[in-house]
Image: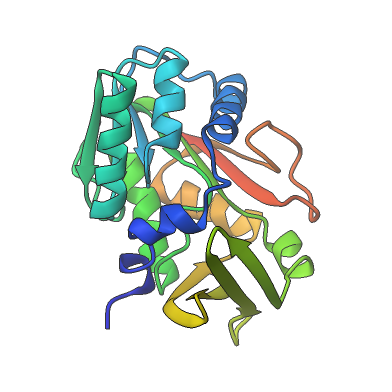
Length: 250
């Protein structure tokens, strides 16, 4: 049986989450620029780039050497189409597992935006992602990781809900794993009275100090945490956990 992250991000994903739009991506990018001031002329990697929402926003903001990496062939195909329609030059798309980034010392910045982290079944595999990002960065390069705020996610967990998107009805169930470390989501999709698919997600929720330790063990220095990409202070009520680290000069 394939891991959930190899089946959840097909063409249906874009239809089920139409609210994740370009305006939101542009706001994220503007906030990230204010927070870490990445050099527009240095290569930048969007790790888990999906359908290129943030890549196109970065291009619009003046970044000229962009690479998007994702495992989903469907999302990469959508990204390529959107990039072509936009006439955005200088964007390279790569299919790869984020634990094995196929670049060494290439990027000035690596971004992991909007919970593209915590997918793997073990903490060691998640740590491999941070280690791979470290290896892909040039000296003094920065890695920004944006994921779920653990306490806020748990306190705000909605066990069941139903949504309608076009002709489809989504019946969603959420729960914590037995160890309380993961939030697990099942989305059953109905159309015309018949169930047409079921999608599952399982995301590890980290405490700030846990991810700080992972960053430091990978070799990052000047590691800091925030409650959003806008740089809000990290607090138990923060909906997001943003961690930023810098690769040393040598």
